[in-house]
Amino acid sequence: MRTSFKVLLAIGLGILVLPVALQSRVKDTVHNLNRSGFTVPNAEVCRPCHAPHNTKALEVGALWNHDLSGGGWALYADADANSVFSGSSRLCLSCHDGTVALDSYGGATGTQRILGSENLGTELRDDHPIGVLYPTSGTRYNLLGATTANAIVDPIETPAGQSAGLEDGRVQCSSCHRAHGTRAADGRMFLRVDNNGSRLCMTCHISPG
Image (cartoon, rainbow, N blue to C red; front, side, top):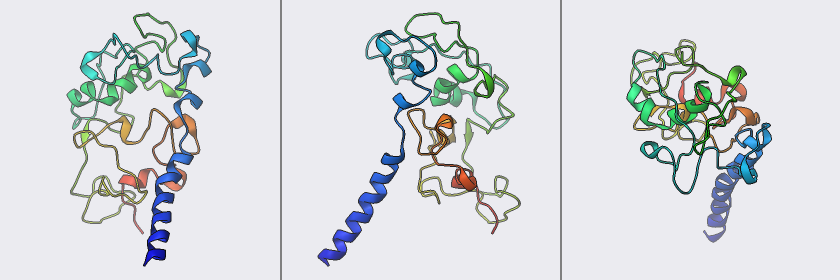
């Protein structure tokens, strides 16, 4: 019995420790603006987004120090704009919708906006929905014609072993991405789960076969 317990404990610790070992830290990612051609005072990693005192955006918490997007996004019809405006997605979009400069933080007005595919713009109906309730019935969101009775994987216990990262039952940017690091091979995408073989997609969506 004692040996079995030790084996189970070792397995359990492995499950807990392995994701941490695979997870990159924010200082090693492009979210560390010091690695992206910016001059952050004292080479601080956290300052462009967070500050311990005198933060700018009291309504969003997270000791937020970056200028916030004003919204005006084009969202899917079943999205709740208020949930996007008050949730973590607004923090992401404050750089990624291209309306606020990357270096607009701590009271400074920046000039360098995000470029390329990382700039999603304010037309978000060509991206994965955010601000939508996680579905619990029907088959609309199943992959490639799967017809199982449940529309989608249980968000608490998924095949990939990850929570779907919902906010008040709604899908947000953080449902797929981790701003402070990643467990995926492609660190630039900040994915919660590596999408090799569409594993991230099937964390939520049911595929046939």
